[in-house]
Length: 118
Image (cartoon, rainbow, N blue to C red; front, side, top):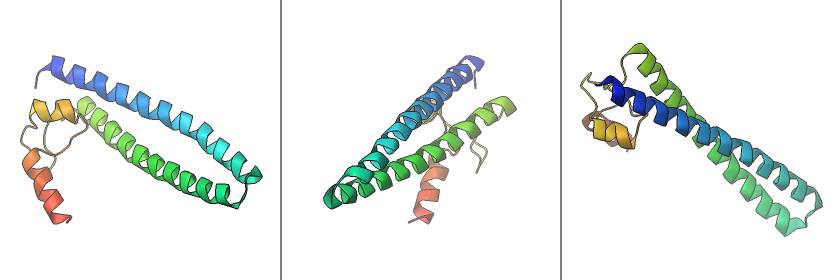
């Protein structure tokens, strides 16, 4: 894989990481507003706020997972193994990495994994 492409993917991964972190920071202030509203709202508002709080929690978990995947991809770049499937060892097509820069499996191995998890 060309150095230029890897540098491009590294920049893309760092940009995605920064967006997730910025989003998480804004969600914390949203969560603070939800907590404040629970203290002053009526019962219906409180129920709605609980649902909103649970939604924010799940978004937080998804963000944490994505950050881990991005961090792992950046580690593979540093180690010189970025773009290699961790299952079969074959090259991951650049087109796949363009759309999913944190990908660690080639399309065939990812498909097999998804079939096993059904």
